[in-house]
Image (cartoon, rainbow, N blue to C red):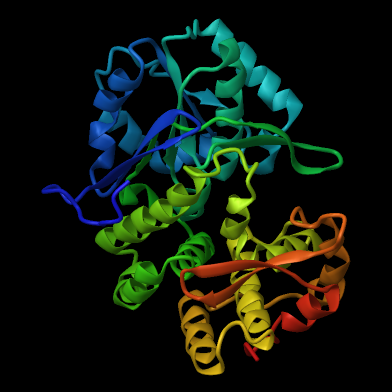
Length: 371
C-alpha cells in the first residue's frame, strides 16, 4: 500500500490493501459513487442487495439511485433496518437475513451497506452470516463512518449485557466515500465525525503536518478537503488493520487513541453523547496524560492540545456525566488482569500502549475551558 495521497484526474483518491487475505479497495472523492456499479460487477457477478434505513434513503438515497440506475445485477428495492442502535438487535438481524434469503441472494452476489455506523455494523454481520459469507461493500453516509468504522471489518449487534458483544470480522471488499453524501449531516454529526479524523492525524506524523492546511476546508465541508482527510484517515487505519486484521496481535489497540475516556463518557451519558463528541474529550485527556507522564514534551503538548481544541470545539459535558464517568472505566476493553491500559502519544505518529491507573485517567480529563 502506497503512502502517497494524491487524487486522480477526476479528483478521486484510491488505494488498495489486503486484510486477512481479503483485498479491499478504498475510493474517496466527489463522484466516487459513479464508479460503484462497475466495482460491484468486478467483485461479484451475481445479485447485489442494498441495506439501508428509511432516514438515510430519504436524505441521501437519490445519489445512490442515480449512480446505480440501470445496473442489472442490483436489486433496486433496498432492505431497510431500523434507524440507529435499534438496527443492532438479534430481531433486526434475523429479519434482515430472512429478507436476504427471500430476495434470492446467492454466493456470487453481495451486500451494499448504505448508511452510517449502525447500518454498516448490521449489514456487515448479515453479509458474514448469509450463505456462510458473501462480499460486503461499505458506502458510508456519515463522516464518522467514512473516516473510521466503514473500514476494519468489525461487525456486531448489541446484547443486554452491552454494546457490540456479538459479531464477526468481515472485511469489506470496497469502501466508497463520496463527500456529497456528507453534505446533509447536521453540524453536530459533522463535528462528531471530525474527532475520528483528528485521531487519525495524531497517529500519523505526515497527516498531522497536513491537517492545518485542511482545517478550514473541513469546517466549511469543502468536498476536496473532506475527501483527502477521509482517505488519509482510512490509510492510517488500513496500515494497522492489514497487519492485525482480527485484533489478535494487539496492534489495533493503537486505533483506540482517546477511546478509554470516550467510552466511559458515552456510558455515563447513557449514550446520549455522540461517539465523536466523547472522542474529542478523550483525545484531550490522552494528550494531557501523555504530557503528565513526560512522554510528550511540554511545548509540543501545548501546541497539539491547542490545535485539537480549535478544530473540534468539544461540546460541554453535563454535570452528571462529569461526576459518573469514572465508574465506567472498569468496562474498558483494553483492561486486562493487571489493570487499565491506555493509548498515549510520544509525538504525532508515535502512539504507545501504557499501563495507567484510574486516578491518572480521571485527572486527565480537562475542564470546560480545556485546562
